[in-house]
Length: 354
Image 1: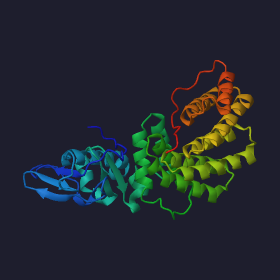
Image 2: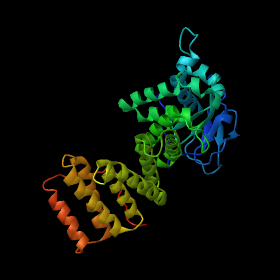
Image 3: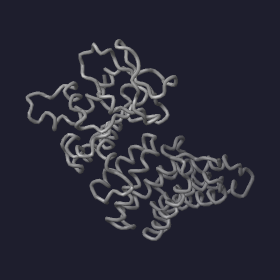
Image 4: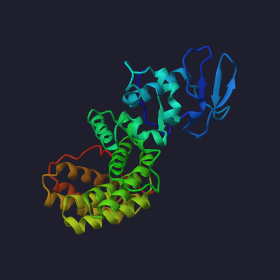
């Protein structure tokens, strides 16, 4: 069985946990630690001695989960993240069963989805600094970057989520290391299609960086862009519009209207305007961004390709054929020469008015 934690999918959840017969010699997870991701309830114990089920909503459950497999998955995940701390004085690493026997010391909750490996560990507040492999948060963040470099986004998200989830709230005091870790976690969650989960961490990162470094610091501007992106992908169009508009104004004042960062922010603002149903304003703004980009930054073919692809999609979605706007779009596209348009724009969705 793969020991790694799997990031949750909000649309793929179950409401039942099935515990294997009591004859099983392995220690099992305490039921008080378990919660269903759909209803956020602790399972209810039903069944006989030969087969015990834990249901969140009797009669509405999906496939039961094998408690041994679930216990094994949690035990291996905890062992992987805490092996340094739990085996510091042992001659050999502890087994998953030994970890489960101590799991209540380190875990606050195990959030369970549809499969035995679809789990999210919530660490106990007092245990976070030394539970996760005994590393300080700054070192932990660096370890997570190594996981990202190896393409292990699921493991990276789980490590940071377990460390940050108990301590990041709307009133958490600004801290530089915590803000860096929260920004990195939000980036991973947006990239893996979990923007709603990313919002809390992106918001904290922006608040902390603003307090520590000021509104016009690069790290604050980057955090503002991340929060705006998370809101856009979560469908919070008004919040995304407010943040992108502010970001565009700040970058224009700092770098100038022809700067690459400014033009990228302007293009994102145009996409949000389109999502708000303001086709004419969005179209005009995006045309201006792409023409300025081609003139001021001719080597930025990748960014130009993304903007041109969005412009084409916007033209079709807004139904502007035969208008002056359509002609201007064609002029821009023709002016791109033989430059290839990017067929898939990762992380951006051009949406018509809802």
